[in-house]
Image (cartoon, rainbow, N blue to C red; front, side, top):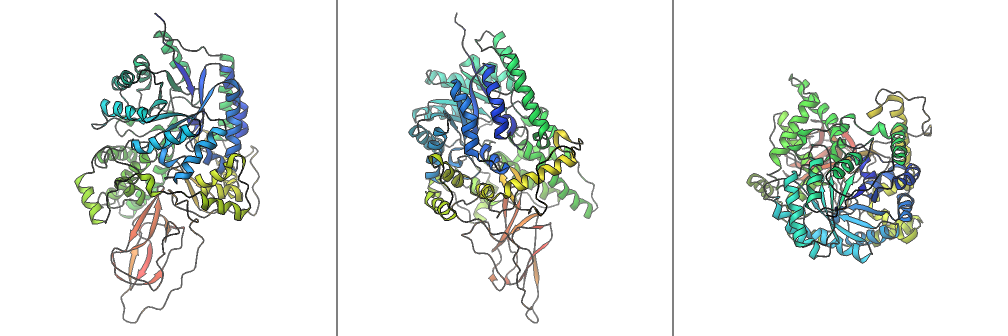
Length: 635
């Protein structure tokens, strides 16, 4: 009997993103690429997508140059390249105008990317079908992804039917994207068998994270059921919150009777050594040591490996906030492990209540943020759901796509009380064409559109990061941050105190601002105007420079009351340029919006519980506030 062939795809980009904050520079990628080719075992390599290009911008590198140089060696060797895209959200966390989405596939195809893997965080077929159409029009292979999660609504039939719909809609291939690694092996095998029964000619690729511990058994099961391609990582960044290891998978499948490619171990060791050298150079400073371990506690909350880096960073700041409050109220402090378990339990509790969104970008961040906010409020004696950010409301109301399940009655009631209405039309209709806006900005700045209009695309896809890249401020901020980490030690290199290591020069007069840009749930300090973590890219960035606020004399006999901050973070009067900021002298009613506090990459609307006239605004746009700080005084 002829052996069934299984081919491997290397997740060299995702290896890094699932372990830490940054990815290798283009010079490092170009250095390692020939040896990956020389390994001789990869039919495919993941070369871009997700946060890859934003990271380049934050280095101060041109991402288009990086993608072209990184894909070229694989193109030359006949190894297919593939990217991950977020359908409605393109290559970012927030929805993308329709014409920018269409442009993305033309640019990526011209840069050497063969296959795109569009997924929707809600598995809304409308979002994925648009991407399939745009990708194929650009000449790319459309590998539609099923965002796998495990719940009472995410059944075998649910996924088989979704795959059937996407294939009938033009998908060339299907990816089973087990982004949290919580798919049970037998269940996954049934999904693969069901798809193959309907569409035996359609290639299937399996992607999993190793964190919870199911992945190896799942790979064996899906290969037996009919999968042709398996995503793998390699040492020193396999396992942990990342992906399964190439050597283990190859040995397992060979022993099980599959035809798998042989590995050039001399080349393997070169790639392994170079990857370790990149860690030792600087990337290790941005990898939390805990992300190198597997953790079966992840089975319950189902949080994806790719967000664990940002989660651990969040926990540090949120733990400090909770313990500051507890110390003030003479209560025992929590440890990070205490908070982690409370968070995992809260995610399990609220996930069904918010309609079972698959826990993948950006919805994994939204559910995690909502759960963490609930934990913080409950620990401080307040009520669950007392803080729900605007972009989380958008998810709950269907503005990114239809939720797989139903909202809990208490959330429906809360939505009604807050004037929130369900959105049922195609989500893309909320984000019309916008390229002309960005063409105007390019022209006004005298910026070149680039080969195949790729620079125009980069501005349109990542406005804030691109502006910071063009100004040079992003690179300065990165260099300053890296210099500090080299001095102090951090991440995997904690305690190394590499002050003597050559660090990138930082101008003596450079003083990094505290403005923050968010990339895939990560925070990066840059000296630029700060917009929404899901920015309204079609508008100008929000101005965040401190602006003095005039304080009129209080009216004689009037009683002055205060609106205080319910949590710590950054205070903004507006989060996009279409909004009108409250100002001194305005008359406001109870419930009126007075501003936002940005915390955990989401904007939390702050509404007045007082009616009257604004007599003082104590905070400025972008200023740091602590819980119970006065934001506005009203008479």
